[in-house]
Length: 487
Image (cartoon, rainbow, N blue to C red):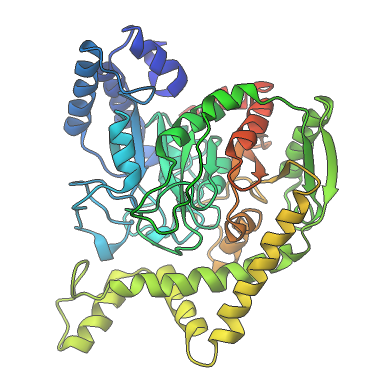
């Protein structure tokens, strides 16, 4: 399988590296070769440094030769969404505003990956400032879905999902504000985990909506997601929202925890707008769990119909606040056409931000403005509390919830020019962010046109171990995760 190293799992590769059947340099070179082969079609990367990656791999081999292996990620090529800070690497958020910015420091997840020996490989394309569902809002270029390069890979972490699906990285990190890990994972046929809010530090993550953002992994398997989670989870003094909690051995718990489980089917997630092929695939997954002896129960999340409205008030309000720092004065794009300081603010922001980012800043500024704060932002936060309570009420009866990840398979590039049509792509994922819950998307089949479909499992707060065990139960009984796109 030497020619397929780029599609092997972290679990398998770490064993081969430990046994010296394979070197980290050989693995990194295989991933580089694969990337050079398919990148002209996929365009997952904003930038990459082959010399630096091979140098990191050489250091991993030297550690192993000295008997100092750092664990299962030592020598494994991991790509990062271009919104996570890595010292001396570009940090652009796929925006003209940060086109030439190089990070002066490591974000916490980058520090942890380095301590685990991972080879940090490349900066991955995304919707500008993580605002979008298709990666069409990137200021650099459009990433394609590896299964059909005329289709979108999803977003905002489209480059991170596409890179794993195409074999351009063994695993990647993305960020999820309203579905930006799970939605592209579903559309690209890989595993995407959005952890509980506060489980992973956001220090070094360029902020979109600070009460919603969470970093998480893209992998080929649920076990690999557990390995990645183990390396990056944990309390961080640099993030005031980081939560102090004991971390289980996610990989071990994954195998120890057995069903049958009580699983809930939210009736609000199976109505109008759900593609019949997606619905049928999820129903087959439900039938699998029923056949395993799981108790399947219909539950209600009655405030689901308010999720989209509450999300786009809260998220845009926080985006308006967070992006105010990009003013053309301290760092980022600075207009050369400005006549005075006021004009500098206007011109720099007008030139540096794309249309979708401007749209959300304007909306967020409006809902925070005098006379509208109580009517919009405060009310949205109250609705958010009700949405979270719906989930907690459901967990009085069930262990986890099963839903589709997306309402449809991947759509054609340019097919959804209307912003609202794109917003609706996240209809099944945004409630999880509003409630701060963990959720995972796993492959559950293909459409008649050969596009991947995703199953979403939503767990209790900080119960990632149980959530991943439930997901692995389905994964182990099917081979969807073993299928890869053919170019």
